[in-house]
Length: 172
Image 1 (cartoon, rainbow, N blue to C red):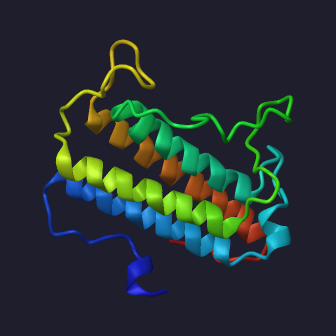
Image 2: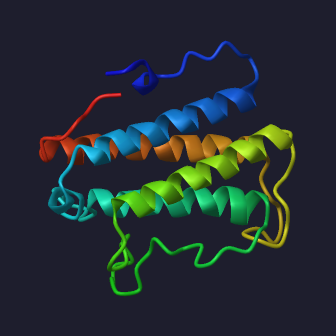
Image 3: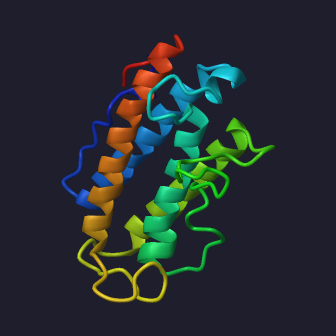
């Protein structure tokens, strides 16, 4: 495991710096785990809930976009719920035909750049703009950060299980 794969040791008491560092850490962990799998393993579910590792990745891409671009910034986004497939009656995550790992990882990291920019230019006590995801009572940026961080932490743990069952890379 390289130093960049380890939990960040940021010498900062600034919560925005810590949020950005930990979110970057989780994005790198997702990429490392997914790159350890074959294309077949990326598209195969090994768990009872039925999602594949690639489906989890598309969820993370859209989740972060929903909270920061569409949510906090109130920017229009194409298909903010694009991780939920119309073709699945149970509404589970789905990856469109022809979309692969590299394309989704690029989208994940582009979203991370947006998140880092938001954290560098806005105060954590600032409320999300109205007009995107929120039409009333928008949360603060700090709340959004905590929510997104726990989403990543939870789903990276889920991904560990799926990757381990496929004999891929687990751990941090």
